[in-house]
Image 1 (tube, rainbow, N blue to C red):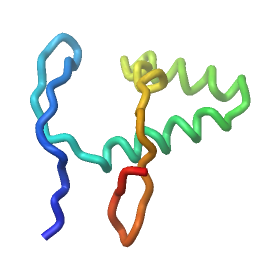
Image 2 (cartoon, one colour):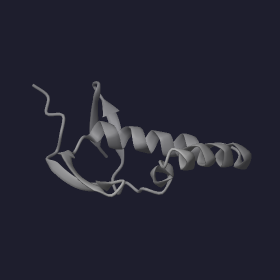
Image 3 (cartoon, rainbow, N blue to C red):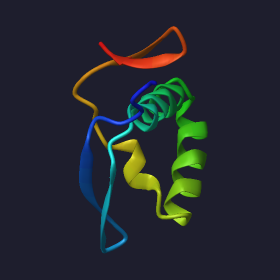
Image 4 (cartoon, rainbow, N blue to C red):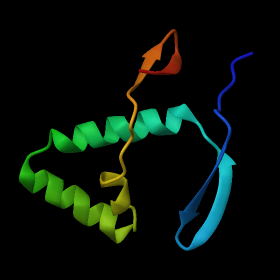
Length: 79
């Protein structure tokens, strides 16, 4: 059986404390989204930022992941 989380984490979501399993897949997707954003033209970045701001999701653009996450045999692994 594959363990899909690394333990529990606590974070603030729109003023509410949330406790949830830490899941590398989420971090993998965040890094992938940030990479795609970084590769956009300045004009396209502005459009994406406006959309994310409207949905109150713009903090996703500035979150940082200290370790690289890759895929190997259909699993996320810390690099």
